[in-house]
Image 1 (cartoon, rainbow, N blue to C red):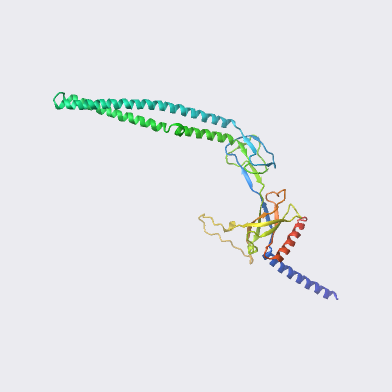
Image 2: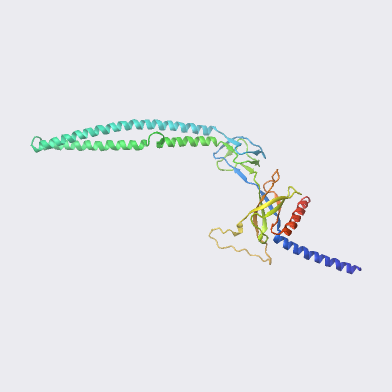
Length: 353
């Protein structure tokens, strides 16, 4: 075979190989899509104190595993202990004020009874005076004086009754239902709760990471002071829209983590995101911003799906670790076979790059 014939044969072989590989990649991207755009996400809790204060002690070290309920750091207790004592003193003041109001109320009720008795006595005297006036046994001036005294006595009754009502409203309910007493008890409960919050505890199991908090720092209520990385693993993968035509929830997949080359893990699709940021319109009062491109074939939009690793490694990858995901549709055993070969090949290539 001449050199020209040999060259022509290799050209034909290359063309055939290119066409076969082109068709393979088109079919593979449709029925067994694979993406290196995958990332491990572990829940990150930004721990913030519920009260403000100076950090008295940090009970953990960087990258230390903790369990739910463990103390992470503590704040200075003295200001909150003082607030608790003040709240208890305030309740004692309420008890004293209520006792004084009750004593005033007893006196006001006695005054009311005295005013009623005086008014009833003057009413009887007025009736007798009016009877005598009819028989010309008393002067009109005397009768008018008695009537005025009766009216004054009835006004005193109304004033005493108003005083009793005022004190009853001010005192409120008796016992534990008393408004001032309940307010004082709430203040004590809040002070006790604030004192308990000086111990900042872990809300879930996890690992303390990137610890920058130091003794003497001032921690502000609601401002994150440290990060706690959880133990639950969420794997997200970004694939082109057209690659997800045959993918649904529950589809099997295989995963290779960059940090664990040579190992393939079973996974399953749990959900597909309903949208991306480019599809979110904000009501900002602006007109539509239409993106322009001079490319004949634009970049494909990627959509994020979530996967659950069936048997994760004992030592979870760090949050943000990269991975490669191979989807394996159960309905096509041939695609599953080639897909398994692809991900095995990728697992070994991860030793190199």
